[in-house]
Length: 282
Image (cartoon, rainbow, N blue to C red):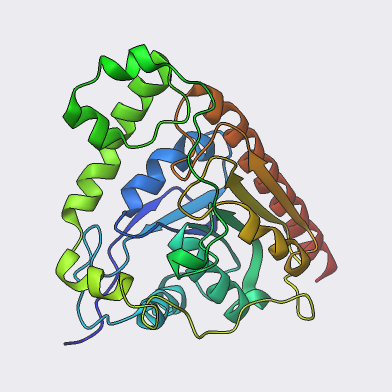
C-alpha cells in the first residue's frame, strides 16, 4: 500500500502553523484547544493534520514512527514550503515535531511542545505516581463505576473540574480514540523498536535558535515533566513550564485554560517578533 495523504483542517490566513496531535488523537482534538487562542491572534494559517491511522487519515503502509515522520515531512513539502512556518506538537506529536524541527529548522520561526513524549519506553520514564491535588472522596463516590473508569485519575476533584473533564472526553478525546485504527497502531505502540524515532533532533551542541515553549504538567502520570527538562539546553530561547494541577490532558478547566492561553499567546508574540526581525534583516 502507498503512504496515505494526510487529512487536515486548514483554518485562517497568514503564517502557516503546523499542529500535530498525540497518539490515537486527531487534528480536531488540537483545534479544540488552540482555536480559542488563534481567534484572538490574527495572521496565522492553522494546519491541523491527522496522522496515519488516526482522525480521517487511513493507516496505509505506516509501520512505525519513522514512517509517520516521513508522512508529515511529505505534507510539509507539499502544503507549506517554501513558506516559513511554526510547529506545534502534543505528546507523541511533540516527539515527531522535534524531528521535523531539526529537518526544517531553516524554514521555521518557532516550536511548541505540549506534554512532550521524550522516552518511548513507558517503564523508563521518570514519572511520579498519581496523587490528587484536591481530594474529594464523597464526590468520587457519587460517580458511577463506568464514570470512574472513563475519567481515570482525576487530579482536581471538584464538580467544576470533573464537569469540564467529562465534556472534554466525550466531545473530542473518546471519539478520536474510537476512530483510530487500533489494529495498526497497537503493534507500533507496543514495540519499543517501532515506537521510536531514529531521525536526528536538536542537541545542546546543535540547538534550535528560535522561540520555543515546552509545556508540561506536574501531575502528568503518562510522560511526566522531568524527562523534558534537559530539552532546555537544546532550545536557548525556550520557556519551560511545569504546570501545577495539570496532567497529560492539559488544559481541562477554566483555571487551566487561563494560564495555558497566556503562555501560548506569549510564544506566538515572541515568534511574531522574531519573524519581523528576520524580514527586516533580509
